Length: 258
Image 1: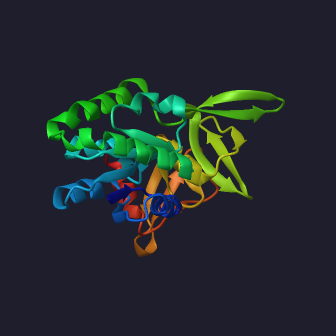
Image 2: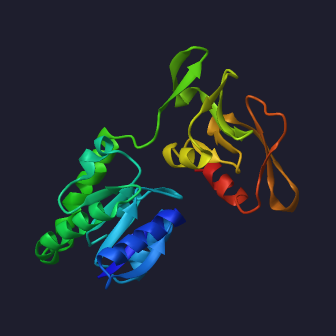
Image 3: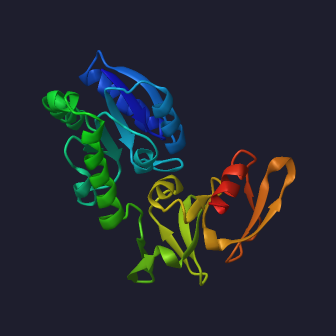
């Protein structure tokens, strides 16, 4: 079985690859892709695989966008960190999903389900898949928001639910991750910045560097820095400029212009 993996986290890819080969030793992983745009290019230039494992949130957007830009004419099993309640609408027809971290037993069950559906899928044509994908996209856009919109934080002895709209930026300091709100309040949260990067809306928040994730409206000023880097001022003000690496600078500029 020729399998394509679309996943932007190296540990998740390695685990998935290991489990697939344990369940189906004869499987061939034909490629691993980590972005929406690279996936679209791949489908336009490569032969269709027999199965795709596809993460929902990729480095440059949601994997559902792939279906809007190109034809995907084979079964897809989504892999995601979201819970079952959020994804009930996505479990349609031949499309299945696995919650991260992927478990071997659940992977085996999904592949067994695929085998049972194989004859139906092999006899279907391109148009047969379109209603399935359309239903998936419609359910996602109308009924589900995959991004975290509230954070439970502690204020003295009280717990309050903080809306993401109140947040200016997240930052790491002294081994903790904190929220800075628009009105300059500060709260500690239990998420890492890597976790936040996956659950925040990428159109609203950007990972500036290892220490900061900032909201678009919190970007106060941007200056060219040496060797192609950028220096960013935040609002509320931080004690110094936030430096964006030369490698990330063009991505940041595209984000500002999107």
